[in-house]
Length: 218
Image 1: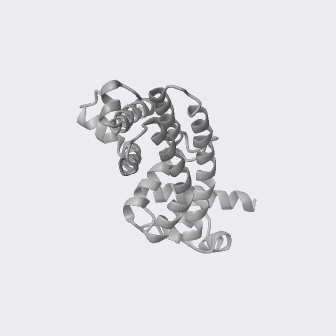
Image 2: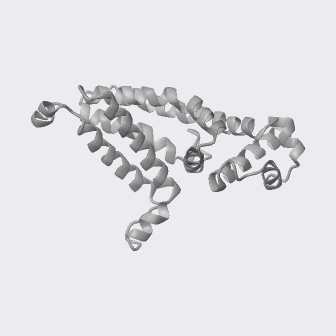
Image 3: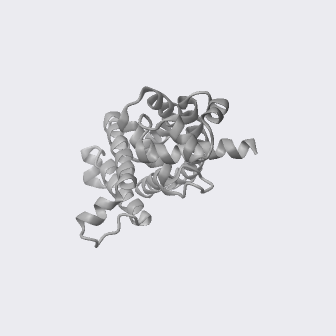
């Protein structure tokens, strides 16, 4: 029973953080959403920062595991362009998974990450770095192997742009629908994945040295 209460607090906090951010949500609001009392939060987590850390640990472990599993499969592809496609999909797809899916994270969690990153809260910044930096470095290295000679600075910047597009597609899908006058469904996750991967693929390949780009030697 205690485990159910604890998990319910984690789930309710994640939902509220994904909608309103970290700073704007109080412990009292989290407890109310979970039909619990503030004492339960203090008992299980001590502080709001510890609660946020628990959310990240419960979501990122399965998400990172799935990403690294897919990355391992992608790195066995011989053709560099095809390998790059697979690597990018390995990074993007788990973020769109259902928040109750076996590979964790999901759209709700990605929205929360984006909102918390924009807030610039020190607790959140530290927790995010601990949760994702190692996996992110593995992907940057793998992408670099697909584009020999690409400058590290470009790989880092464009990896950040990839993350930004992922965040925005999940935070504000309504804008896609609105700007297209309804002809494009911003909630179509498969289309979003395909578009993000294609845009990132072209962006990273553009980092190839001029001679390789002219000869197609990728």
